Amino acid sequence: MKKTLTILSVALVAFMLSSCVEKSKKYQQLLAEKEAVVLENQNIEKEYNAALGIISDVENNLSAIRDAEGMMLIENEGSTQRDQLNSELIQIKESMAVNRAKLDSLSNVLAKSNKDRSYLRNTVKKLQAQLEEKEATIVAMQEQLAQKDQEIAGLNTTVSNLNEDLSKVNAEKDEQSRLIAEQITEMNTVYYIGAKKKELKEQGILTSKYILRSEVPTEAFTKVDKRELSEVTFEGKKITVLSAHPLESYTIVKKDGQVTLQIVDQEAFWSVTKYLVMVTK
Image (cartoon, rainbow, N blue to C red; front, top):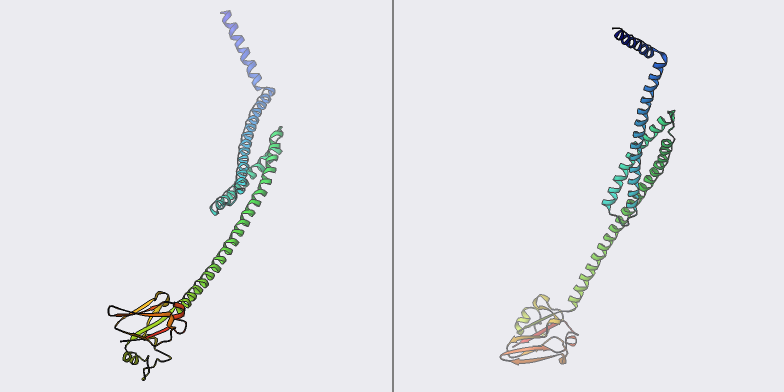
């Protein structure tokens, strides 16, 4: 019984001592400091994680800018690639603006902190400087793209003007070719007719005295290219040439009830007149 009372007494004293310690100011102060340390550690961890996230985003932006700079070095890039690059630059610039705002906010938080954040502060300052430099790079790249677009637009205008000029030149060339072809055709165009005297008189080719007129109706003749005319054949016994042609430039051949005028010297034959008038019998 005494042993039991002793144990109860000791427990009661321990309980009373514990209750007194918990109510003491020193204990409460230590407890508050512990909670403050835990909270501060939590804040530090949040700040550090936030800083790492921002730093990662900024580094990704810087990497994207380096890739864009590499694309700018590619020669003769097409319009589609330029449009894609310009769109990417705009997106990078917008993302950098968001990250810059985050860096500025983080910098303000670190500046107000009483704890040692020198590593994070230095990292943030370094990234802010790099962002500022790369922002200027993006502006320069966008200006370069705009300048290239202007140059391309100017070249397109020049090419368009050249195409118009070329079209005009080709049109003029075609017209000249047409005129030359017409002139060549006209130079080589000759006319011939063979008929009885009465028919030639009726067609206005011979006068009432059966003399060849100086001007004859062209529509009554057969029109040909002299380069393709080497002979003319008629049914009959005889051909008499009324038009002026050198005698040595042609010959007349009779065969099988037909009579043929053969031209042996084209240039000489047509040198006097381009109208061949023959009387057939």
